[in-house]
Length: 433
Image (cartoon, rainbow, N blue to C red):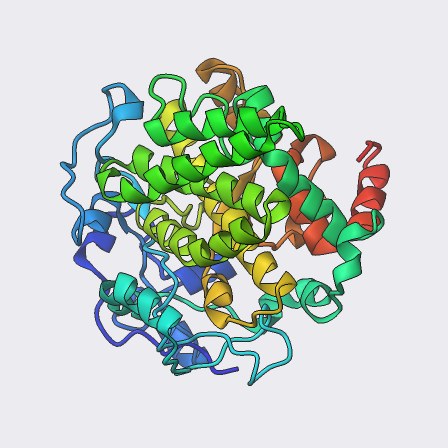
């Protein structure tokens, strides 16, 4: 596995305005950094990527987004852009011409990524055209190696179709969790990746229509099934026709979440035609997730103060709700794409390319389920919270508490550890799975 090439250009000037002055590799290793540009001495000596990647959030909107960098003291649900005090890593999957995984080169697509893998299929050309302007942004992204996914090998290598129907397997648990999301959305007005207060002040039309479809689907009978799927097809068609109208970050998040829920319904309970249509819409879902990556606050490295990791306090509870919903939607929907690709045995490496890069989210039930801003910041100050990178749970498993594990984290823990191992971890912590 070849390491990503070291950065050859100076870090952006805006990095000097960030609180993090050291390169990402030195911060992650908790080692001193001489901050030399373009490559610090430590990274040069170890022959590893040297990335000064933290940038003010507003810079993420310089290409293809016409947002005004205004403060978010206004009602947050109608936000047009965050202020420059928030940092973002432009963490978009690379264009298919660079650093993509391929089954031909390695056994497991989830664990391996080959450099300079070209493709000429029509589907890949569609993805290329949609992401052409993003390729250059990836040069400064630090790639992950196959060792980062070693714990996930059994899903990819040992998967058999019957496992989806065996209640003792992780595949069954994951599939059942995915299938439950439409009904959970109707019953609770939220999901493990869509915060209960995300659309409290403003619900985009795409989510309103999706809620109607999910409600009909949850009460579907043999008598009304045709009508339910007729409404679903009409709502899905309208969503795709109006995709260019998604101008604000909230609308972009809403359309991706709605399409994700439609895909779950069509793939798990649709007929042959609906499943075929859903297969074709997978590229659209991936494109919309890629767009979300451009507006995501991807939780850069914390400051190390007296040996403790100190994370920057969110500017507001409302902004954290939006940001964490974006992060969780990206992780679970990308995982859904990879799982679908695996179950269909498509072996299309574009659906694994997202895992070349870090996707961070927050492991903390008290923060995610806080009923008010006061309770949120009280938990932020008094309770530990853990930042998880992709499926890396090792640090949390050693020192984390079962009280921090919400339904979202539970699904990913099962994918990482296995069903029996996760249940045993809960027992060891004195809790029930």
